[in-house]
Amino acid sequence: MADNTDDLVASKTEGFRIGEKKTISEYTQLDANDESLNRWKASLGLNAGEPIGDPSDPRKCIIKSLTLQVEGRSDVVVDLSGAGAVEHLKEKPFTIKEGATFRIKVAFEVHHEVLSGLKYLQVVRRKGIRVSKDEEMLGSYAPNTTEKRLYEKQFHPEEAPSGMLARGSYNAVSKFIDDDDHTHLMFEWSFVIAKDW
Image (cartoon, rainbow, N blue to C red; front, side, top):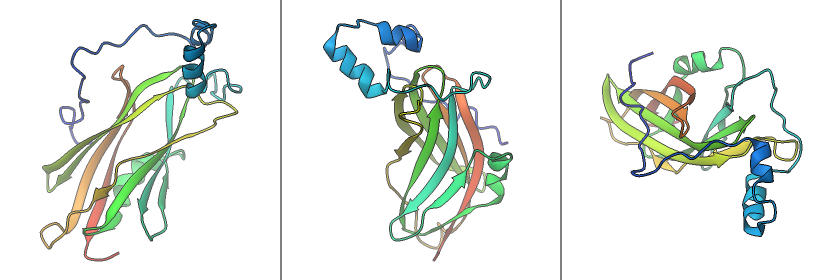
């Protein structure tokens, strides 16, 4: 994988410090009589259903799939849960029509503890030169349960570049990282900007 360490650093909010980590049980017991806090805990999905995380799997966030969505076209879904799926992404480029508006959707699971400040970082290069760097805040999430088995998040729409100079192959490196600077998934992929689909 290309060395993109400096490019894939998440931005920091000045003055923001991560608070003390709590277990799900501690969050559940936290100010049990506080009505507004109970509504907040319910909005996170705490106290709803049984945890689905495998205790023998230490992963806190599991990215299940990425989907390329273009209005008027069938979604292109990349299943990331299979063996070797991430490693083959670079070899199977997406084709995007120049000037088309598209968006990415991610599906993921959270296990064991509250995931704080999940972000998606992406650096795109063409012929070795960086052409864009994007960061998308996905938010904070409680562990998935039998009541809420999967999270899905759509990214902001993007417009593919257009014109003869924009057409061609691009390489990207993407990373899912949280407020603790823990990388949950990092992978290389590629796409082609073409005159037509």
